[in-house]
Structure formats: C-alpha cells, structure tokens
Length: 151
Image (cartoon, rainbow, N blue to C red; front, side, top):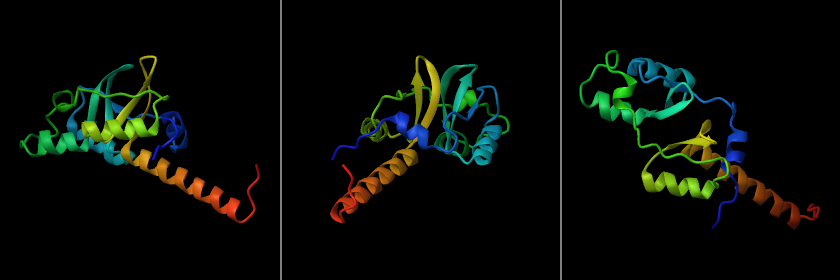
C-alpha cells in the first residue's frame, strides 16, 4: 500500500503549523523538561539562532540524565542532545518519512527547507494524517456506493 501525501500537507494540519518549539544548548535540562511539559511535546529542537544543532527528546532525558544519575538542574541541554540529526523537506512523502523513522528508530523529524527549519513532524503526526486520509477514502467509497459520488 502506498501512502500518498507530503510532509507539507501534514504540517498544514497541525494546530500551530508555523510554530517550532526549540531550546538553546546553554539552557538546563530541567528547563527543557519544563518546556516539554508546558508545550505538551515529546521533543525540542536545539537551536542557536536559526542554526539547528540537534534534538532533545524525552528519550534523551531518560537515557542520558535519569539513568546516569545526573542532575537535570545542573546538566546543560548541549551535553545530552542527539546531534546525528535526520531531517526531511516539506516535499518528502509521508511514506518516506515513516520509513526513515522506522529505519533510524526516531520519533521526530525536523523539516528543513533552504537550510531553514520550517517545522517538525512526529510519528503521531504521521499516524494521524494516515488515519484522516484513510477515513477520507472510505467516505469517498461510501458516497460512490450510495450514489452520492460526484465526478
């Protein structure tokens, strides 16, 4: 089964499509956790101005701070971020991004266009988009079966 649609279409369905939550590498991990909770997100982009340096996820916190007995109020974000950043463009397909996430075992992908961060997509965003797309197709089929289909 091929999943059609682009990341651009996924971003447009997000509640705040143009907003990307980020944090400086010089902030404390505690502040990052506060921001994750406040914004109800699972990852923050780590940026210095417009430059994407890495990504900080809840997984990074648990594996690099909590399990190592570090203090989140003393540890800086820059010390624990994932720097092997995998990015996508708005033109990537939903299917391509799902493959990338599975292959690299990541749950968030920064979306970059012309070297500028324009968004971030999560596995949840992609799953929600797929469900909406499938529901739309089902509705079209039902309309066709019941004679409500307009060509």
